[in-house]
Image 1 (tube, helix red, strand yellow):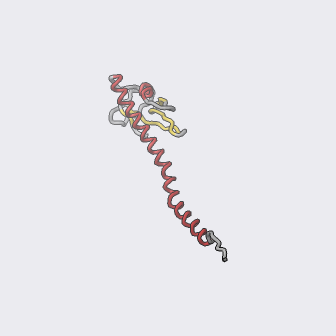
Image 2 (spheres, one colour):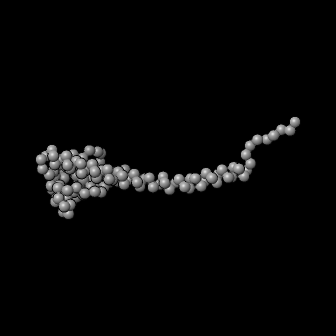
Image 3 (tube, one colour):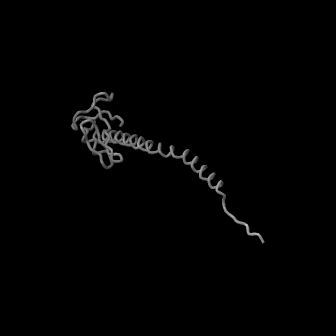
Length: 122
């Protein structure tokens, strides 16, 4: 009786490694882009949260809030009033959602006591 050996040849193993390398080369750039997409989504979400807080503050106060008053309506950690807007912390990086003293979003606030009539985006 002849004994038959089982297993993979060296060429078969090399081909599997080459195929796995090609698949990982295709998939890797997609995962790298996800981080920048997530950062952009977080910035857009925080800008939307500040705009929503502005609308709620107007309804609650029956008038336009100051930068300091607007800051109290924004939910989240790392939120602070600044002279030029609302500063928010996203992944350890400080971003400012700009605030404006006119409804056309052209004149930026210069003090935390300024009235906010328009909110911009990060």
